[in-house]
Image 1 (cartoon, helix red, strand yellow):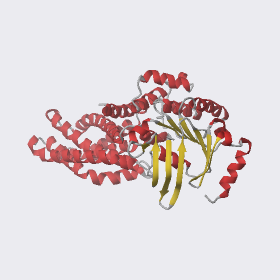
Image 2: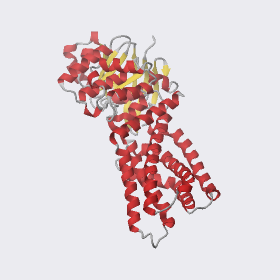
Image 3: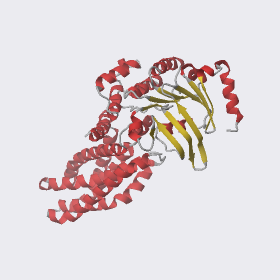
Image 4: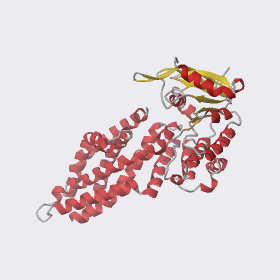
Length: 238
Length: 225
């Protein structure tokens, strides 16, 4: 079977510290994988490697069958990243930010695409206000609009709920549910088990640089997943 | 062509932000103005020939105010981790360097274009018939300064004491271009023929080309984690 994301024994060390240890991960097209794990488990490092921001110390990573080293630019065209940092310029408006990123990705029909994605995240009325006047929730929605500009086939979400109030989190959840439509493959890192379980098709628990547990959501006992999580994290031999 | 469009998009993004905030330009311009005014008041121009010191004063104003601009340049990219956002796009990372470098060059040249007439008035120096050769020297000298400065600005952006580190890293490297610029500016202001400054101009041009190529090629490795 061809996998969209195929990692084989990927490790990453910073000096003496191992952030990732022999992680192997195979993700099919259209999957929504939620990765849970405590701080320092190496989740962000894994996403940075998958988005080609950081090179692994060892192991092989293939995205859409292409090796990260050989097809760098081609792979980055198909990947969008939403982080707890928005990657947005505070002194520019949403329109100017999206126009800028659209040009970086060679997005055709730029004006129409900007109008479409801004409408999708519900920020049309604020399209020409400086981003610095936005709340955290609005920034996060605009960040998703930025990612949607080139219509990537893979999206990574790194703690997208960080700093959001209940209302903003609900809005974000609805947007994430919409992202899932179609063949898009999504990986989300979150501490929020409830939010993660409601949108994903697969779950994983990462502990001390290793994927300690991975399962399809249908096979997961949602009611007892929290205790499963704490048992796995607490086992400590990973 | 596509590559150059992306470089221009980065330059235009910086210009747009600068038009809105005026953070880089205002700090550079006020600093250069202060340097010129302080030197003007500290030296008795009736006793000292202004042509003996003018070129040094001018380049002190340019380089130190340029440092202020370079310090701010990559700080905008640190906001909300925009540099990482840029690195995630499929553009060649050298385009990020070129875009930032051209933006810095434009800001510095505008600051210099306003500072030079003020310098002329304060030091009572006639440059009317030397304006083209002076513009060539200032352009080449600034290009060399900004070429290396943009690279070191990217290197120092994650350092806590970046305001101190940038000049410490940058000045030893750009000493040749500053000395050559000061010497050729002095020769132009004292009315020496253009042939006298050709060797200095060649030095600046070689410096510009070498460091532009080195910075262009090495930028990718410098911004990677």
